[in-house]
Image 1 (tube, rainbow, N blue to C red):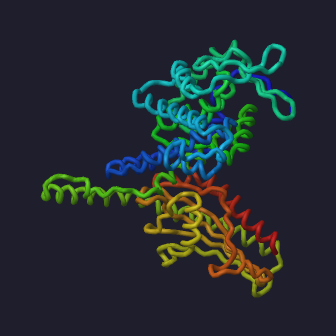
Image 2: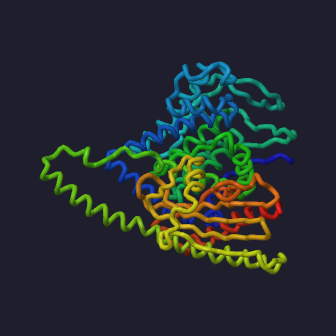
Image 3: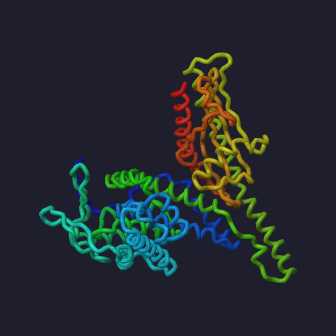
Length: 493
C-alpha cells in the first residue's frame, strides 16, 4: 500500500449530503417524544441507560486505541455496576487494574464534561478541545513521536496542547499514514470549527461522522486523538437529544476501513456505521423496563387526582391514536414486501424445474387474519439477542414466502413489530428464514425447521415515516435479506 499523504480537510460535499438518511429524522423525533413521555411519567430509565452507554464507550474506546485489553465478562460488570477496581482481577486485563481505573475515570470525566457544557450552551472551541484532551490524558505521562530523521522516541505528552512533532503511524506493510503537520494544525482546527458551526440543520449523525473523520485527519494532539474524536461525537449527538454511539472492539476492522475510505473522499461507510449504532441505541433504550405509573407520582387531593387522571387518559388516547399510525406504515411496507417476494419467487418457476407437488406461495399475516401471534418466539429471540424488547401487546404483521421442492422447504419471513416496553410509534422489520430438508434430520424441529437470520440489522420506521422516502432503502434491505435466505437454501439442496 502506498504512503498516504496529508491533505487539508474538505467540507461536506453534495455527495455526502445526498447519503440516504431519509428514515432517520422520523426515528429521531419519535425517540425525542418517547423520551419526554418517559420523563413525564417519572421514569429514569433513559438517564440510567445513557450512563451505561457512557461507561461502555469509556471501556471500548481504550480497547480500540490499544491502551489496554479487557475481557468481556469484566467489561459487562463495569458497565452495569460502575468503575470499581474490585471488579477487575489482574488476569482480566493486561495492565494494572489501578491504571485501568485511571484511564476509565478520565474517559468518563471527559464525556461528562462534554455533556455538561451542552447545558451551558457552550460551543465547541479550541479551548474546550484542550480541556477535554487534558482530562482524557490526565494519567498518561508519555507518548511516541518521530524525529526529523524518522527515528521513534518516547517524549512527554503535552496535555491540552497541540502537537510539536509529527505523529504519523506506520502500517504493517511499511507504508506511512501522514497526518496534518504540526505547523498547520492551528489553522486546520480553526477551519474545522468554522465549518462545523455552519452545519446547523444538517442531519446530526452525518455531521458527527464528518467531524469525527476530519478531526482524525488532522490528528492535532501528540496522542489521544481517537479518544477525543469519539468524545466530540458524543457531544454532537447529545446536543441534538440523541444517544452516544459506542464503537466497540467487534467493529474495529469495519470502523478503520471506513475511516480509510473517508480519507479517499467516501464518507458513506462511516456515516452508515454511526447511523446503525444510533438506531440500535434508540431501540435498546426504549426496550428497558419503565418504572413509572403516573398515579403513584401525584400528591393532590383525590378529587383533583380524578380530574387530572381523566384529562390525562383522554390526552393519552389521542396521543396513542397518533402513535398507532405506525401500523399503517407497517402494512404499506408489508405490501411492498409481499409484491417483491412474490415477483422474485415466481421467477424461480422459469429457472428451476418444478413438479406437480412442488409449490411457491406468498401470504400475509396480521391482526386482520388472526395471525399476529405467528413467529412470536423467533422475533422475541432475535430481539433479546440485540438487547431489545419486541412488543407483542401491539399489532404484529408479517409477509411470508414459501418454496417447496420435493421434501425441501424454505419459508422466508419479514416481520414488522413494535419495539419498546411502551407504545412509542416505532417499529422495525426483521427478516429470517426457516429451512427444512428431507435428507437432514437435524433441520427438523418442533417449530418447523432450521432458523436462519437473514437481515444484518433491522429496518426501523416510525409513525412519522413517509413511505415514499424510505421505499428504495427498504427494497434494498429486503433484496439483500432475501438473497441470504435463497443462497442458504440453494447451497443446501
